[in-house]
Amino acid sequence: MASHQTRPTLDLAAGRLILEEDLPRALALHGATDPTDLGWVRHGARSLLVPFAGIHSGITDAYLLRLDFLTGRDSPPSARFVDPATQEYVVGGDQHHLPNLQSPEVHMHPAYQSPTGGMIQLICCSAVFEYYDVLHGGDDAILWRNTDTFLVTLAAIGRAMASPHYVGRFPANV
Image (cartoon, rainbow, N blue to C red; front, side):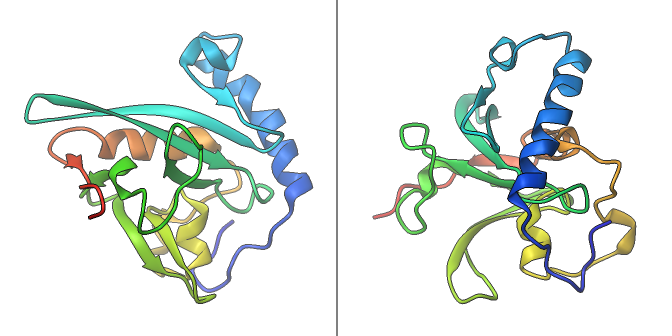
């Protein structure tokens, strides 16, 4: 189980195995046999790209979420919205690829000071690796459990993408 007091330990081999184990189960739950049936794309051995959309003021905005499986079952996958062309996120240059989320469960930070000194994108949610990596703190009732899968992450972000929590796209950097 994740902890508010301890940063997660990277275990890339375990992360790869978690994706291999959980992806077929997730597909079956959605009645799919291949990730592309859901619009998902495998990106290397430990990454999955998942499209999301938000509607605000009658405008539909498309986004791409990248999940990176960096640990075993004790922590959720890393999650960040990325530029669809590069599948990456550059702090200070790509914030227009981020949804502005303001829900009790998920809040978006385009540039957040990491404890290691760098600036990162932070999807502030207990179902995201970075939440624990920055030692966010909070109520133990929301901690990631060893029985959770990336579907918990997708569901939390999906709820935040709904009205009234989705308030549009972050503006392009000027």
